[in-house]
Image 1 (cartoon, rainbow, N blue to C red):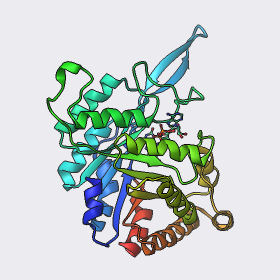
Image 2 (cartoon, rainbow, N blue to C red):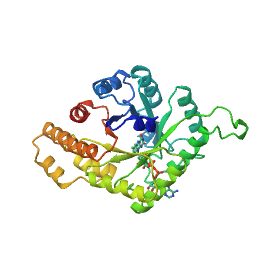
Image 3 (spheres, helix red, strand yellow):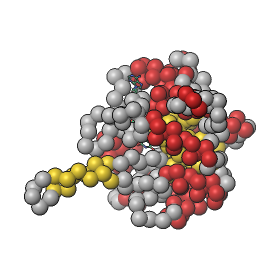
Image 4 (tube, rainbow, N blue to C red):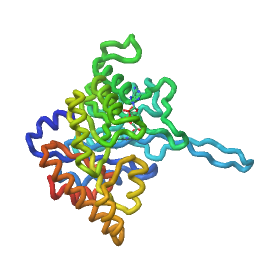
Length: 317
Ligand code: FAD
């Protein structure tokens, strides 16, 4: 369990990372190729993101639009099983509210349990591209806190069908998302932390944060969480910037700020190779400061591109 890995760390900083499933049509070797170079840093676990289906519209010859459901990155559960089998480290699937009824969720949790996957991250998921706001499935969850309740119920042997009470109990360690710069839809930081606390009350064991590029935002967020009575581990999420395009993409997609000093360095860089180096140096400095502050585990958004994260990890772990 993630919490046990942190307890056992004994002052030595731990390294973990997140990958995403490959586009449909690729084999699992493409995933292993992104993991192999990072195994020398002994990650206690690897996160695998979940990607829900999207709706695409295709124009037919008669001018009408045909709605098509596409799932571009399937395979989260299979990849997790493959990782645990090949590397003997814990694989952590992300589990979403979006696209799942409670029954679908229960069945997914049973699959994970049978595969020996005892960690997961419970998330709401974003709105699908064709919608402005998140819409829960009929008979699904509206918020991650409700999903956390369902998972902790199953840990107690409470299934949706009341006749199944006290049968097999699962054993999930539950992570949830936290946002050092607040979630994009939250009206204020205080309200976001109020609902974050709800996820902990409902049974979450730790928080893993959205990426941030200014450590002070993380330190302030942790202080606010602690002041509100949240005591669980808070794991910082870090991403090395790698392309000029990300200067606009990251604030737009994730609603996080980039510090001016970093922006100016990237703007002045002559090409993306130079940006990659700037991103590595920035993230290395962030990592060193977090380790110095006693943060026990740093989590990297490698997104399958091991090279940058490896350059950082070599300096820290
Ligand atoms: P929630 O905790 O449900 O919060 C969503 C919003 O609702 C917040 O603004 C919150 O303040 C508010 N809120 C919560 N409860 C209530 C309530 N009862 N009443 C009113 N407001 C409330 N997305 C994917 O699709 N796949 C992934 O694999 C994935 N992995 C992620 C990993 C991390 C570490 C992070 C930080 C995000 C990840 N995401 C992923 C993105 C995530 O799904 C989105 O950020 C999503 O918009 C919110 O998810 P959440 O679990 O934080 O939602």
